[in-house]
Structure formats: structure tokens, C-alpha cells
Length: 415
Ligand code: 17E
Ligand code: FE2
Image (cartoon, rainbow, N blue to C red; front, side):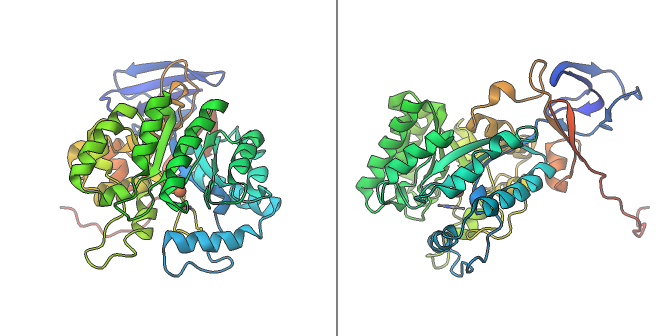
């Protein structure tokens, strides 16, 4: 496959790119625009590595309103609604919804997904339905599965056994939810247990950590310490961490030293948590987003994610990661030109670090020929215009191709 006139991130020149047998074999600078024979003429638009969705609950997609709507808009009512919907799961119900969501994500340029699957179910119905889809979806995307204990590990009957069973069935990542455990002690113990379990089975860790507007929810320090002392470091991710929004600055300043030393990653879900958090506040209401800008400026890896596609927690999920970037830039005061220039890192390279796939991710000779072409020339234009994905190519094969929308009538006002 030959691609011409491609613009790469942070580069001034145009490029010709050759892929053979599913890998990039040449990434060559052009001196000018060319019109050679080719498979894709990128027409001077941005070609970059595929988008990454590093945090989504695929078991719950497309269930909003079933069997009832989350009226309070809180995380906790969402968990109650889901506990009722969970009783109704079957293999075909789960698989058909997951495949619909996967199509939506693929059509929006995503090729790598980390999904949290609830394992607080004695039958593990969702996990058993989704584990075989990893193989089926491989031509289109890579799927990492987190064994996610939605109702707790220490606070749910046979919680530990279910987590262990989930790893046997095919989970790649060990999850946790310390702020939802019955007691602080359970939460602390669960963090140590999760890291030990992951080490024992050579798995990654991704914890829903401190997803609560309680400035006293401090399980992040326990997780980061376990990551540091176990040597698991960047194999560990802390998701949500919204309590950090409510931490006092003196504590947060001390905490950041540990976070840097630990090497752990962060995932923030800005639209979801702005919707779910602040629900117990009077005015002013907290935004419920972790300190994305401050973490990034401290050199800590932060990726952005959607969390939900039309589920009991959030009903407007649409598979478009550019929306998350747009939202985070606004809500986290990242509106400087320097912020814009690297904005796509949040849904590309940073997500790859979370998923521990950086070695095989990116536009470089020798790496798998996975890429997207966007209808915009750089990070700034793509974010501002919320550009469409024009092509998505995987292992040198076209997955999607889209015609950019064309205006057929518009008043001419220019001089
Ligand atoms: N479960 C949870 O604990 N938190 C969330 N944000 C979602 C599910 C979507
Ligand atoms: Fe989540």
C-alpha cells in the first residue's frame, strides 16, 4: 500500500508512506505535493496513529433506561440501575450490544480498546460473552479486558474468587473499586490485593480509584505506593481519580511526589465525570474532573476516555474521542496554543502507554501499518473542527473510508 501527501504530527513536510505485509516499510519526506499513482492520497491532511479508547464499559453499552432511567444522575444510582439490568444479561444480548458499540468506535477511528467488564456476577455472563470477541475483533481492533469488580472485591460475596476466575477466563487487567468497598480498610486491603494478584499472574492493573467527590477518599496513595514498591510502576493505571479535584492543595502537592516516583498512568473521563460528580454540591459545584493539566505538566501520563456509550451512567456517549479532548481542554483550562498543539496525545500516544502497547504503536518503519487520516491538517484544526476520520487502515488494509461532508449551498459573504 502506498500513501502520498500525508502530513504527520509535529512535522512541516509532507510524506510518502509505504506499507508491506501489514507493516510500515518506508516513511519518506516529499519535497513537494505529488500526484503519483497510490492507494491513498491524503491530500495534505493529518495522518496519525489510530485513536485509543482506554476506558469503556462495553458490557453496559446501549442499556440506558433499561429497566429504568438513572434519575439522580449519580454514580451510585447508576450502579443500582446496572445491578437490575445485570440480572437480565444473556450471551446474545451482551454480544450484540458490544458489536454495535465496536462498529461505532471503529467508524470513528478507534483501533485499540480497554474495556472494564463487571465481574460481580456469580455467573460471569458478560465476561464469558465478551472474552471470545477478542479474537473475532482482532482484524478491526485490539481489545484488552479488565476484570472490574463493580460492587467491590471485599464487599461482594466470593468477590476474590470471581476476580481469580475472571483471569482464567481471559481478563488481561486486574481492576478495583476501593471507594465503593464497605470500609476504608477494605479499600486499602483491596489495593494491595489487586497489585499482588496482577503480579502473580503477570497482568496489568487498572483501578477505578476515588471516583467520588470525597476529598478524604485517598486510595490513590495506596495504589501508587503498591505500584512503586512492587515494581509494577507503569503497568498500573488509576482511572477517574475525581476525588483529587477536591483534595486540598497542600496534600495534593505532597501526593504528586509519590505519583511521579510511582510511574503510574491516569485515565480521565471528562464528560462522564462532569455529569456524575458535583451532585452533592450546592453552588459552586465541582467539575468532577481529576487534575489533568497539573498531572500532565508534572510529566505524568494522562489519557482521556469516554467511559460509557448510552448506559445507566451516561446516555450521550457517541464513540467520538475528539469530543473528550474538546471537553477536557475547556474544563481543565488547557486553552493555550501549546496545549492545542499536543492535544491529540491524550487519545493517541498517552492511551498507548496506558495499554502498554507503545512498542507496536505509531507511524514508524517496522511497526504495524495501523493509522487514520483526519479531515484537518494538525492537532489544532482537528480539535477545533472536530474533524471526521476519512480513512482508518489496519495492518495495511482499509477498514473505513468516508467522504468528508460537502456544503451544497451557502451564502457568499467574502469580499
Ligand atoms: N461504573 C463505575 O463505577 N463508574 C463509572 N463511571 C461507570 C461504571 C461508567
Ligand atoms: Fe469507568
